[in-house]
Image (tube, rainbow, N blue to C red; front, top):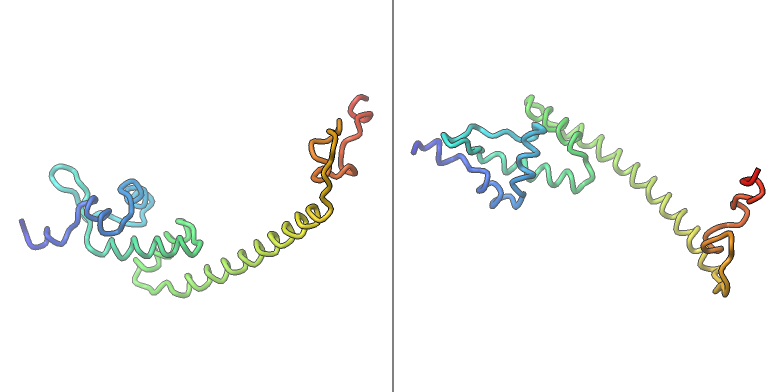
Length: 149
């Protein structure tokens, strides 16, 4: 075996070292996020050691909320020899704005649910027109007479 061959990892070794499933590694390769260096005579993928750095970056970026498409764009900038930190900063700033919007939406939902709970009454009987009157505001129910026209 050549010295160069010793530096290449089979996909199973990449999985063991990165803790990323083989299926995911193949998927990332199909998206162009990683590349195998070559294949063995038996057709097995071989990867250089730098694939571990890329996989760690991909997982960290995903944990920060970046999509695989966004990660792919960042890696393209990197592969062209440029530092992608500016692009990453922009994407993370966008994520903060998205998170702020989600927080606002969740706070609104929480307030609505708390309002429903504060007026909760144990309804003894079943109402013909509603499943649960607390959730179904009667002002929004459809008038049966309109449906029968």
